[in-house]
Structures are given as structure tokens and as C-alpha cells.
Image (cartoon, rainbow, N blue to C red; front, side, top):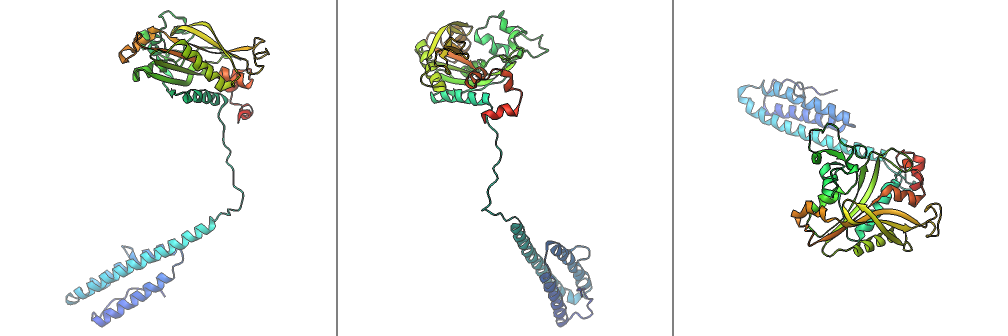
Amino acid sequence: MAYTVPKLDDYSPASLDKAVQELLTALRQEADAIGSENDWKEFRDRWMARKNGILTQVNDLWLKAAPGPSKRDVGGRVNQLKGQVEQAVEAAQQRTSGSSSKARLESERIDITLPGIHPVLGAEHPVIKTMNEIVNVFRAMGYSVAEGPEIETDYFNFEALNFPPNHPARDTQDTLFVAGQEKKQQRDRLLLRTHTSPVQIHAMEKQPPPIRVVVPGKVHRADTADATHSPIFHQVEGLAVDTNITFSDLKGTLDHAMKALFGSNVKTRFYPSFFPFTEPSADVQVTCFKCGGKGCRLCKMSGWIELLGCGMVDPGVFKFVEKNGYDAQKISGFAFGMGVERITMLKYGIDDIQLFYQGDVRFLQQFA
């Protein structure tokens, strides 16, 4: 039978001791009968609820009803009962939480002798994989990696790189400009960068010479998509500036890089070209890494494959960062740039650049 708080007619010490002992006996019996968390919650509410809990009833039926001379004695006993009930409730909670945790661990037990489940991992996209390989070659040569925004101003994308105001590349037919900028000066107009060269200007503005940086990234041009062109593609460019840098340093650097990428038997050759931001400028060819220079379909029977452009930094470029220590009379440097998609296509024998962007898992799985 559940315990109920009796009314007291006799407030003598002996009568109070008897009532307290009966209450504590009921408390222990109910605490021992708790077997689950739900049982504990019912036990807690039955004894400690504010409205009709047993402690509240003891306070109302014993302490408030006690005559004046007995209130002090009854109050001391009620306070002791409160502490003992709280201890009993806390002990029961620890006991039930421990047993439930043990049961939960038993249900979650893992057989470590079973074979593991191997998660299906993705793989680097072939373009990103090639770009990382190129960057790592130059990192091993002491170059740091620099990155910059894809939305640039005309100043950083063209003007600071020595492009004349009427250069064809600054026309909307070749470059993707952000709309609604007709009221801005030309140098302040925003565009999607057409090469990663603006990052070289940012890097020189932040760091005085000497500097050696390699710049990977995505670029945009107003090209019609076909087998060899895409409006979005990737480039890796490099810049080295110091005292007494010569064209021989440029040739040695790129020759070493091409051998690191395509094998030690690869040869390089340079022939004149033109870029607004370098003078002299050159295009770089390497011996075909498929036929070894003998001639095949990949190299169009020439034995050589054109891979990148390069040159000595034009003194006109240094004028835009002259305040940061780039005095063309004291320093010199070289720059180079290559298209990652082109190198990836040549490396893996891919004949359509659009395959990189169509998201066909069957195509991408070949490179996993």
C-alpha cells in the first residue's frame, strides 16, 4: 500500500520519531523498487513535487499544523527529512542512469572481428590534379603560392600589366565585364579576370623584392565552347623578381619544370613571341612526350608540343609597383603562364575540353 502522510495529533518527541521512521521506511522501499528512468521520474515527482509531493504535505500537515511550542522541534525534523529525501532521489538517479548506460552500451556493442566498411571516397578532378602537380613542382623550387579574386578591376587585369587602352582584349567581345558600370572610369570597371596575372601585381604590392610566386586559379573569357575552347578554364602563372635575373634563369627554370612534369628526357625550345607585360617574350615547346620527338598524331608529326608562354617582365609593369621597391634600374624578373586544361588534355590523351565540365561520372572515374 502506498505511503500517505498522516495528520499528527500528538507532537511529543516519541510520536514525531515514530512518524519520521515510518516515512523513511517508505522512502527506502520505494527507492529500492525503482528499475527504470521512468520509475525514477515518478518517484521524484511523488516525493518532491511542489504542489502535492510528500515533502509538501509534510510541511503542510506537520509543520504548519504544529502548535507554537512544538514548531521548532517539528521544523528541525522536517528539514532533516528534506535532505534525506533529496539524497535518496539523487542516489536513485545515479543508479538508474548507470544501468541505462550499461544497457545502451550492450546494445551498441560492436564485433571488432567483422570486416570494416570502407567509405567510398572521391578523387581529384583531372584538371585539379594536374594543377596541383604543376604547383608542387614550383613549390619544390622555392616558390610560394599566391591566390587572388576572380572578379578584378580593369586596372589590375589590364592597365597595371601594360595593356594599352585600345588593346583588343579590353573589348567586351573578348572579356566578360560586370554590367551597369558605364559611369565608372575604365580602370575601375569590374570584370571576370582573363588570366591569373593580376595576382602578380597584388603580390608585388604586398611584398617588396625579391619575390617568387606561383599563381594557380580559374579564369574567364568570352569564348564560344567547342572541343578546344571554354569560357572557363584554369591557369598557372609564375613570377620571379630579384637582382641580376636574366633570360638564362628563365630558361633554366622552365626546362627543369618541364622535366619534372614530363620526364627527364624531355627537351625544351624557346622561340620569339609577344605579350604586353613581358619583353622579350617567348613561347615554349617541349618534345612530344608520346613519341619522344619522332613525330605522331599528338604533336602533328612535328615532334614538338607548344605548352606555355613566358618572358622577362617589362619595365613598364614595374612602374606600377615602383613605390614598393620595384625599381627597373635595379631589379629584373621573369614571368610565365600555362593553361592547365591544355596540359591535362595532352597528358591524358583527351580530345575535347568540354568533357572536363560535363560532370559525367563515367569519364571522371578513369582518373580515380
